[in-house]
Length: 418
Image (cartoon, rainbow, N blue to C red; front, top):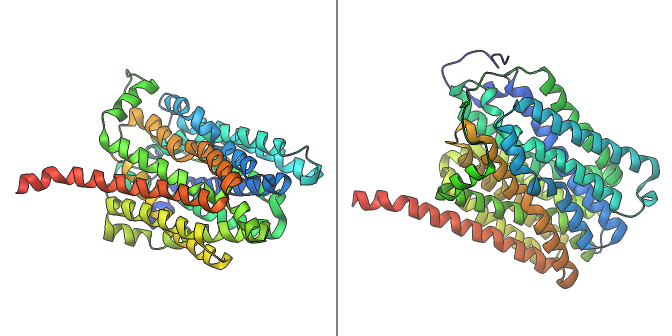
């Protein structure tokens, strides 16, 4: 029987009060660490595979392998999460990823990258880690209402979204330091350790009872019908796809970009660190920016800035200018993904929350395998600059779509007023 997650409150608490809550605060911290580990794994695996093969295509394969499970399994994982105890489901997914990550870390420590029979062990284990992530993500998003009182729900949803955006920001920054200190093998070891805090938290936290309807259509088709009938959700999912697609070159194409500048792993680490550092810096002022712009404009401006930053990265003549461009892109990325994720979580019925957020995972993470293969293949054929520039155009298209949707939504109000 679930119990109360925290002290009963009637007024919405501040961010600092939520982060120090013994239930939600621990969950937030464990979730953030786990998400950082995903991106450390992604950067370390991409760097290792490019070092072994010098192939941008295979680098794209391993970059996409971590999110292949999100593309294939996540809709069904979302349906399961709407029927079972989400805490236990999340615990199962994280435990699977922990086991696979530990195998890869131990293997590479024992024999080194040179002792591996090619890139396939890294790719194969990364697929298994991704399956654990696919099981975890819908439950990770949908568990939040069981951790806080109703008055805190919107603030908690926004903070939970930040764990993904900060993980995408801080993870590459940490990966940069890790690559400089110990190379990809150290990255695999650190990633394995990042699963433990959330596993421990899930074993000790208590959750509230959250009512769900006892008789409802629990199929994936029901949510697909819901999304098709809701223009707002369709646009937000399309914008999320654009963000995920345009973020792929940070992993898939920074190794060949660094090689083009005559450098290696160290410059890859600097590049991903600049992107992550820019996003982490923006996180310090994100609440103020969100209050000034509003969530809708934050998404449009964020996607526009993200696309422009990646284009500047693609055409930069020197490594330091490329790093500055990536920092700007990282700042814009954080605003864009925070906007669309928070807007999507608002107004979702509890009975479909897991499946709707599974679709978020498919668009943001599941698009990555396709993007990685296309980016890597284009880079091998035409060079990483053109491949990066084309990926950036996807973000600009997403910004245009969000802007159009905002005008359509506002039109009835203008007509009614006039």
